[in-house]
Image 1 (cartoon, rainbow, N blue to C red):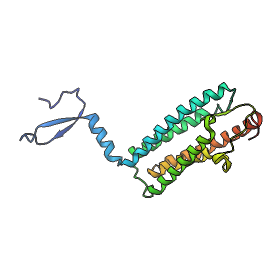
Image 2 (cartoon, helix red, strand yellow):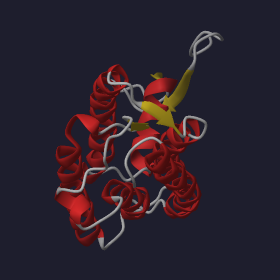
Image 3 (cartoon, rainbow, N blue to C red):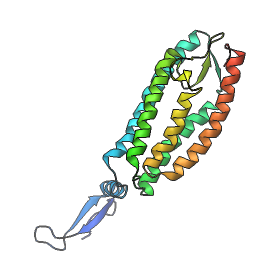
Image 4 (cartoon, rainbow, N blue to C red):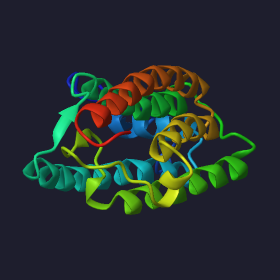
Length: 213
């Protein structure tokens, strides 16, 4: 008699059970695979930071959509819409790349993670200072209301593009903290190219639509 039906998917384990040394039990394949991935990935509570950043991105997109609607009602003109999908795709692949490296390539947490985490927290402080300073003008897109002026208060008093500095910092530091070095370097290079395109488009828009930039 077969230990399990031919159609059953599972991992066969042989061991003693109730005094029967040759009795075989089947562990569901899904459970075994999940346990295997969790074991090789060297998970720790620190990995929850990745989930928190994902949640943060979702909440920020909701805020951006709300502000975008209000700006368009005021006649805002969007620039750089052609490269916006590339930016979104890059951020999705950034998360995917980190997860793949941690799970499949069994990356270990960087021994300097406390310093890296401190840099990330500092970046978050700068991010929300920038968002608060921009108020209803903050979006993930480049929207310029005709005859309006760029914001010059808050961090914009000292930095031209503080939010872009935050994003560049995150894209590099977070993967490095979890040993995802391939993702960190690759995404940083691509992001630098996209930011160069975006900043040029933004500056042109302020000169042509707004009042300087």
